[in-house]
Length: 470
Ligand code: BYC
Ligand code: FE
Ligand code: FE
Image (cartoon, rainbow, N blue to C red; front, side):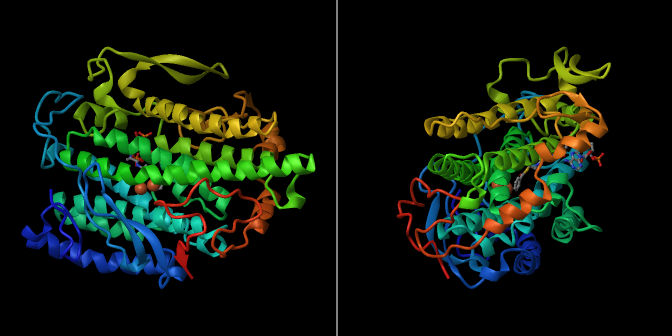
């Protein structure tokens, strides 16, 4: 599995031996760069950024850190090492050898899953493309760009699969990934949350905390796939993904830390005049990002999800470690449902509830971060707590989409929702206040007023290291 760095497209998939595929990818590459230069962080195209580049897929030393300008980043194709004699671990083909080509009957579904996954990656780069102008520190600016180049690489990971395994259809699909754009009224991105703007850094941290975490769970489900190239490529993507969620978890923690300091210092909850963000505003931003991310799991019961599972295309989180028959034929699950106008549960076949089950795992993971944030507050002697709103709150997809649900999980009328939604979701005033704090800080080691410094720098460099040369 040697990584070939001599070629135009670094890879560990022996591209050099497949002339036709190389030509196809090399003709996609300029379109990708044109997209990056137009809809990526183009104002910083000439700046050197201290970035991590993947150079190996092994456990140790897989990444190399150095200054590089972003358009020169070596976006490559890296699949995790194949597991010898890997077998399908769930669904109707359980126990059979995994596939190294796409079975005809699953071609359509696999292409769709790969296209949806691929669509989110450039979408997030588009959503974040203005944030460089208002970065709260050089450290944060670098982290933004690290996330951006790696989301670009995740797009490459999906485009490789489309080109290598799906012929002409796949090449068209790969082109379409650069033609849909976040928020474009005519050709939007496929999933809701990826058409929302990410206008400020509080949104960015919550996006990387919640929405990149949907990425974690979806990618984990795809690492279980019977289609081995998809399993191996998503496995490697997860390595990069950990940093994105770190940026979110620590970013929100640093905002809270600063908020707590200002609350103590001035003995008030309303710290806006001191350049901090009130906890109530943070909670509203949290409510927004969490709820739109829950929509990304799809319908609560879904025949698509059941089919993906039965066919072996997409498993559960940690499928192989679960102690059941991995077919789920007779199994049932208590799914969330609305019964006589109240939220309750009904028994459904487990295999139809897989989106909700993945969402359950996601929610539990989200709660860990909220608990850590609350520890920062309690250690500062502040009794207010942040919380995850009820899963039915502010939903556009799934069983709750037709109802208005309060953060504490009560169904309310449309009138009550309209009356109270300014308590629960960011208002125009909240957003313009947060936006007023977004002034760039470019002196090494300095932080914006509303944000505490990180605990340490990147790759053993100090916090005041020049992470981006401006
Ligand atoms: N918005 O059976 P249903 C990441 C559509 S994030 C709009 O309920 P299914 C990242 C759905 O497509 C991870 N439409 O759902 C994070 C279907 O349409 P069709 C991304 C939606 O298919 C941060 C219909 O509604 N990866 O990597 O079981 C930065 C009924 O669908 C939405 C994946 O999602 C929505 N929110 O599940 C960068 C993994 N939800 O077919 C990157 C691959 C559903 O009727 N995707 N629809 O036209 C999947 O596994 C599935 O497609 C979904 C949907 C889980 C998304
Ligand atoms: Fe990604
Ligand atoms: Fe990510």
